[in-house]
Image (cartoon, rainbow, N blue to C red; front, side, top):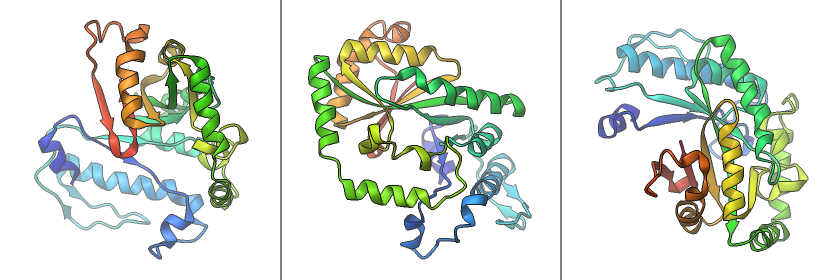
Length: 276
């Protein structure tokens, strides 16, 4: 499927590898391998990516792994260009996987209006990439809640917090708590921190258009940042606000959009916008 898409849009397609840690996502299809999976999910992902890369490179895979055994497995035609791998790893073990096998890694922002808090996550990825000797960039992830004034944006953010589904948040915490060996930087440990549990503690930027533009410029200057993945509380409205009112104020975009145009890739189903 990836090769087919590449034939339509060469060089514009990648695969996001997510190992998955919510037991319920597997149990609904009777596929949960047991809690031991928490400990070997990146080993599984490593073999999975190995198979894909073999097939993309030569059209043949003979991997004899623990989880996948291939015997003269073949695929053709080959993709016309390299298909990039994007990971979404936050833990130390996940960063090692991303540094070895991915081209980019989503790094979660944290806190409310603390754009440079992402620096430690970027640095963890840079440190891991030093070991592998590969160039792996960070796509840092933030939610944007913007309006004409700080007060209006903050009122919207407060309304979301006041209307949080407490039962849903409790269920999510229960799912994350099943991985008893997860380290402090892992997603399961950070999604339910009190300040921003309503949106899974995604780093959130709240304020006027000028304030948001300034904070995104701060993110762009951090070592390791290769792009910004934006999530909007109201996707279509947020996308328009960003393109028309925020992006023109960003100093980091002046060399790219001197005439107000933008090089933007959107993923509407995920309600995200990638800014490179």
